[in-house]
Image (cartoon, rainbow, N blue to C red; front, side, top):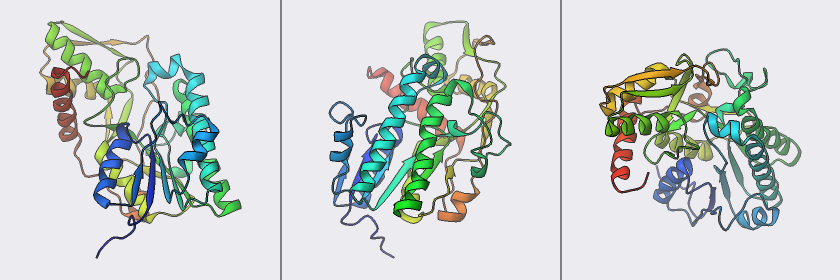
Length: 316
């Protein structure tokens, strides 16, 4: 059966040059829509209302994957920016999309929206059970307001907006910038540098006891695409892999995969972040048939290989 969902449509992907967004765009190109628009932050500052108004013009679908985002250190240094920029971009963009009669708005939320202490696995109905983990609460709450706006606009205006909650992403093209990277790229870079420099130890933040779930970025992009095609309800939906690993085991695995032979030192003066993260992914499977395919170690090897190749080419 031929899928004509994307045919003759103008699709806007904010953050389309970013980690998740670029993978969404790759899949979109294969669908051959009428037009794919990727706003660029240098020329299209979504914090400005007039820019949002221009970006949404004549669009059929908007996938809002743009955001100011980073790891624990980045969140501690720039909480005000993370709150203001993410809130302003999302609220203005959705409102202008509603005014422009855009057919569908896909809001990409964040796992950081969940309460700090949430029963495992995180079920979407538990989103309002408490305050998020303190180090990333400003970011998490700013993104969470898109869910409130999405549901309010559906109720009042009949606006077709959906809200997705991807867990921590990883894979080729990840952000390896030392000031803003998340845990996987940060550890890969640290272990490879230590190996190359002959360092006897690598320092890792926290106790190692915290756990995380990770979703391969290409799987996440597929989940977003399927949801855009098939999901039209107001309830938020988790996108995850149902795979949970402790930071200690993650560090040991990356150490092994890159061939580093030194030891790991845990800096317990630094925060662990949220104690545990593991999603209940049943809603995504039941509502639009999304199940992650990539095994964690397989995806991790691909990210390490990508970094090694790009490091050699001077793109660190």
